[in-house]
Image (cartoon, rainbow, N blue to C red; front, side, top):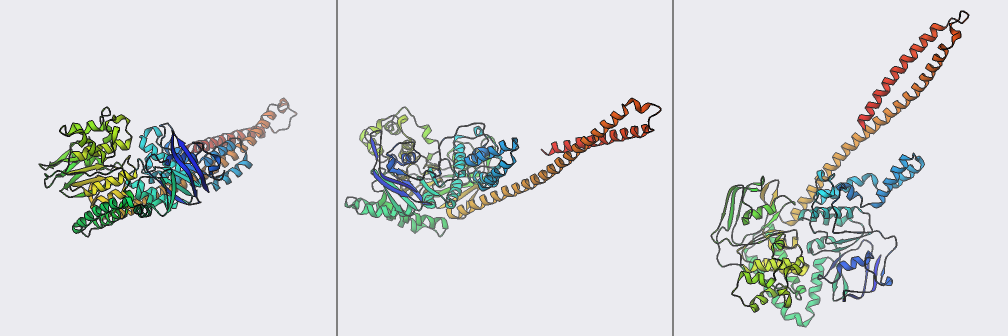
Length: 621
C-alpha cells in the first residue's frame, strides 16, 4: 500500500534518512518511534507531499485516502459538531448538492444524490460525530458551541475527532494523546483497535502504543528498522540486540543489578492488593528492558531528605476549590512511603487536590495539617512556564546552592543531558522537553520527602520518560502522581484514588479495571445519546408526517378555492348582465343571488380553514 525505496532526506544540512526501504501494508498498524530529531514528523510530511523527495522513493495508490492529525485549530464561529462532521468532506459535498437540487426542484437528481448520501452512511454521520466527541471528553452541551469558546487543548481534541470522522485507508497520528487525559486515551486506544485501515502512529506513550500497534518502525542512525509486535515486544528485541554489543555488556549488568535489587526490596513489602501486584509486574518488565535504554543520554535520581514526619500531610473534612467547592468532605492522609495515583476525568479536581496539598490553593473549609519536616517537590503542568527564561540552567541550580563549584553543577546537570555550552544557554532557547528536564533537576536538587507530580511526562520523549520512571521508582519518599502515562503509573504507584462527582475515594482495582470502568461509562453515554436521538427522530418523523398531511390539506384547499372563486366570478358576471333585470328575462334572479351568497360563504369558510392550516404548519417548522 505504501512503500519507501532507497529513501534519502537531508534537512538543514543534517541527514535524516539514508537508503531507507520500508513497506506498510493494508490494515497494518505501525508505531513510529525514535529519539527526537530522527525524522518521525518529517516522514509524515513526505507522505503528505509537504517535503519533496525523489518520486521513485515513495509510492502509494493515487486513490489512497489519507487522514492526518493537525496540531493547531483556529478559534472561529463554526459550531463544534459541524467542525467534526466536516472531516467527511465527501459527505459535506453531497449535502450541499442535495440542498441545491432541492432549491432547483431537480427531483431526478435528488434521487441519485440521496442514494449516494445513504451509501456514505450520511444518516448516521451526526450520531457518529457525537459519539466521537463524547469519547474524547466533550459533553452533549458542547456539541453546539463555537470553536472560539474552547481552549487550545480542547480545540486539538476537536481536530482529533474530525480526523477520526474522516473515512481513510491510511491514518497518520502524530502525538494524538497530547492534551488528552487518561480517560480519553483509554477510549481512543479502544477506538483505534476497531479502525479498519492502516495506521502510522507517533507517540511517546508506550502503553498506548502497546494497545494500538502490532509493528514498530524504529528510526535510528538514519535508517528505519521494522519489528513485528507491539512496543513492549520491540523493547525486548532491542534489548537483546543491544546486549550483543560487547561494549555495553558491563554497563548493562550494572543497570540490571540495580533494577533487580529494587524489585526484590519492593516484593518483600508488597501486599496482595491488585495494584501492588500490577506494580511488581511492571518492575519485572523494567528489568527485562533495561538494556534497551543503555545508550540513553539521561541518567539521574531524585534524592530525598533524611528528615521526615509521619504523617507528612493530612486533610480532614476539607472543602477544596476556588470561589465554589470542587471537592467536598475530603479526608486524605499521605504518610512516608505512600505511592498514590490519582484517577478521574479532566476537570474532576485532581489538580485542585494537589494544589491544596502543596498550599498554593487555600482550602475553603476543614483542616490541612503538615508535618514538621514536610518538604515537597512539586511539578505542575505549568511548571516550565515558571522558569526564568533570561538565565541559564547553570544559574538556576547555582541560585539554589551558591557553595557548589562549576564542576559540581555541570556534573549534576549532565545527568539530565545538559552538557557543554548547553548549561550556559538562556532558557528561552530551550524546547518544551528541555524545560521539563530542568524543572526535574531543580526539584531533585532540593531533596524533597514527598513528590507531587501533575502530568510530568508532557513534552518528554521515550528515553526521558524511561529515565524519569526509574528515578521515581527509586525515590524513597512519598509520591502523589497524576499522569496519562499508564506505564509510569503502573511502575510507580501502589494505590489509586478516584475523583468523581466532587468526592475522593479509594479505587479498588488496577488500571485494567479502570479502563473497563471508563469504557462502561462511555458506553452508557453513547446509549443515552442514541436514546435521545431515537426520541428526537421519532418526534421528527411525527412532525414530518404531520407536515406532509397539512401540506396535502393546504394543496386541496388551494384547488377548492380556485374552483369556488371561478364559480363566484361566473355568478357575478351573470348578475352584472343588464338583461337579467328586464321584464322579458327568465325568472332565475333569485337563484343566482342565492348561489352567489352560498359561494361567498363557502369561500370564507375555506379561507379560514386555509389560514388555520398555515398557522399549524408554521408552528411545526
